[in-house]
Image (cartoon, rainbow, N blue to C red; front, side, top):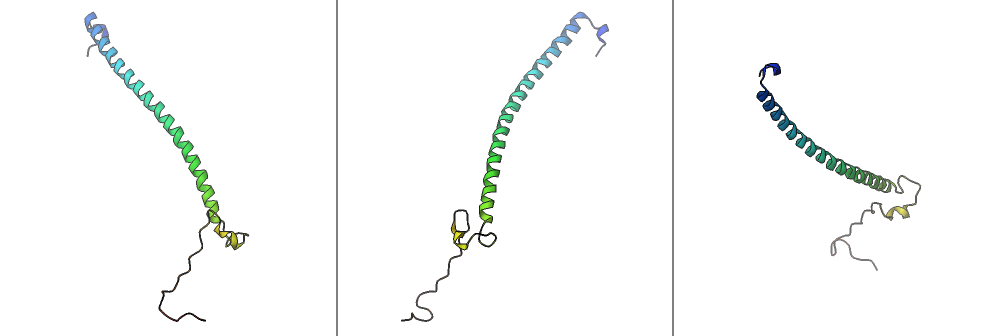
Length: 103
């Protein structure tokens, strides 16, 4: 490309028009990027709130699971409260096998 001082008026006008078109396209792209960034910022805020709520819920559940008579001063009768793991079920013998009932 020639130096601007060496260009004719018509050539300079063509260059300016071409640059104005490029600027217009870039401005449209920037506006679209700004809209995407704004939408993503809103989504990020929602995700952060959900993450905080889930972290609080997880902390509460971990606390409930960690509390039982084996590792606290609670009596074993409190082990069946909500959030506690149930005691293991007793296995029953199959009927008809082994010894009979007593009196």
